[in-house]
Amino acid sequence: MGTYTGPEFINGSDVAHQFSNKMSAAVGDKLKALYKNEHYSKVDFSNIQMSTEGMGTGQVEYSLSIPFVTVKEACDAYTSFDHVGGWNHTPALAKRKQELSKALMEGHELHISDLKTTPEGLQEYWIQWKNKILQSNCQ
Image 1: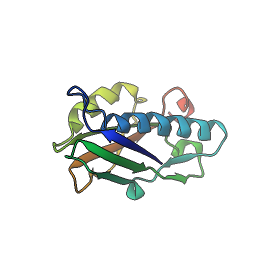
Image 2: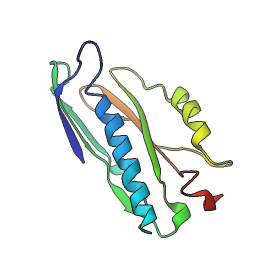
Image 3: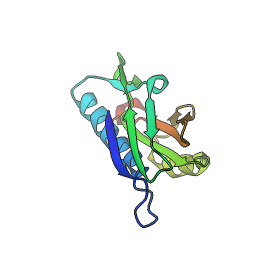
Image 4: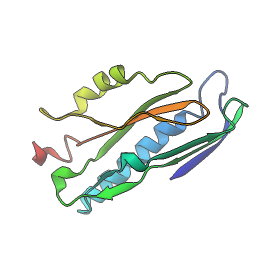
């Protein structure tokens, strides 16, 4: 869980949406740490919660809750996590899928959430996959 509170944009840069990048990195790090400690997990896409109060006013409070579920087998876990999204525009999912394809093991696919949206217009797809180094035994 986490929250960004502050300006939406600074000098034209979408700083509020960069919170999705920070959360994706933190979630990926946590999934890897859990895996290394034999606590096999994946993100529970159906229970991701996003809110973007104040969006469009210049100041926003962007909150994210990205829950995990435990899985029994190491090869049922996911250990890499990312997103593709945008404020008031459709996320470039096809482009992100192409970019992430090189991170996949042969024969593996990205696991992609349904499109998640907030009433204020944030749209995100959340993406998880098996890390090809950490989970190389899952060929």
